[in-house]
Image (cartoon, rainbow over all chains, first blue to last red; front, side):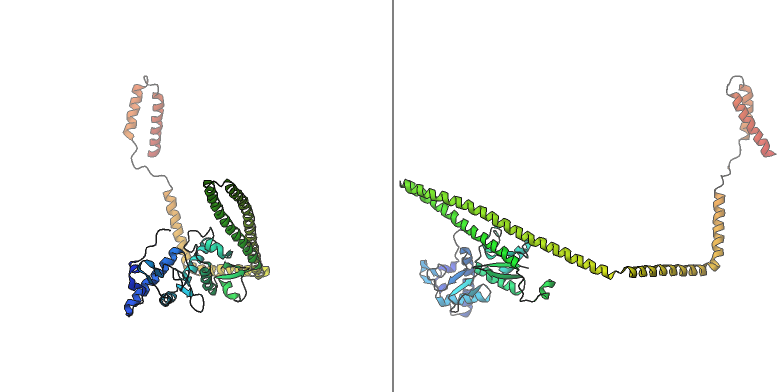
Length: 175
Length: 222
């Protein structure tokens, strides 16, 4: 896991850091950026970004002295939002939640796992799903609890689980 | 799945029991997190103690190791508590399962009772009577129908039966021998017998046999 992250060639290509005026080129550029966002954040196991985070290597390539402007970052994140891989966390759209799988995919993964491990109708803590020993080796192990919680909200709407808050943490019961 | 629609959406399906289990599990998570933290701390302290030794600060190293030892005992305490918690959680969960089993049995019992209520003994007797009557009626009908048929067929049937019986009777008789009786041989035997009478001890027997055969022949001719 901790092998060096492989940057795409575009990362060392200065124009890549500026939104291109030509529509087709720009679409292609945004697509490459979105993929790179997801890949890099997954590599770091990071689920939250701040568009003003200047020194974050994803936004800033020191070697070629190029940086993504917050506006460009917002454009990319909005694209990710359209595909279900990101959501703003505040009204000013500065903090964003980003996830390599969509919430629906996470929800299904966890639900399948719960079913396979016979944990239906049993209440679980959010922590044990996200970081417990039992979930080790699953794709959702180590996922940000806030992301999982949002995923479970979608399941809850379908009546497949119920989220309860107890004190400062959450429990989920699957049905 | 039926329960999904029958229950109103607002009613929570998380019971007080679930909450109790959840609380235990939360405690367990906290203990686990605590253990992780302590383990990290232990590792760090060990490293630090080694460094202190290398730089010659023996007392500091000793202090660190003492702290480490203390934390290790805490860790094992945490382990024990964790065990207790897990046991408690398992007990609670199992109790819930047992409850469900009992509930299931209860419902099964109710259902069985309902079915039994539906099955009134008198009614069953009535049904059985009716069935019996039906069978009798059917037999009657059969009798009538087969009777109607036999009116003309009965004679044929009887005739066929007689023919079959006759056939059977003839076939059971022993077969008539196809070949003729060996007459000349018998005469030879008589001559032989007179010739060999003195020598052969068996001769008288043979003679007698031949004689009897001759007698038979006489009888047949007669």
